[in-house]
Image (spheres, rainbow, N blue to C red):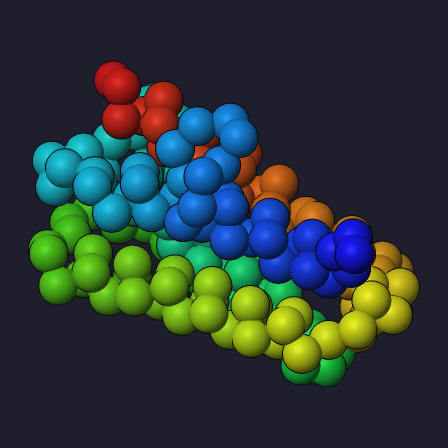
Length: 153
């Protein structure tokens, strides 16, 4: 029996986050092993790896809030790309824990949903949950690519 659309999205979220991603290393393979001295890597005028991590978390939270029906919720500028000048190990671990929490929350919300959810309009937006959830996956991969490039500096 073919997987439902929700199951396919859930599988893609898991693949990008912690399973065998078709394109290369998954999020946790990259961020979970990132050397301490690279957390603030950035190119002139770009965001640091730490800022990109917080940005990823902010937009995953956005998806969770919208899945929970919060029409008015928007990502605050202070959460989108918060400037970070120093990062100790407990702070980095806290951010990884937050990222993990967003993953668990998204998976839990989707595992109990039916495919019809994907056609529903996102509260307060002009697009549906199919666009939003595929967008989260694409967004994660896009910024993961930036992080890998910054690591190679």
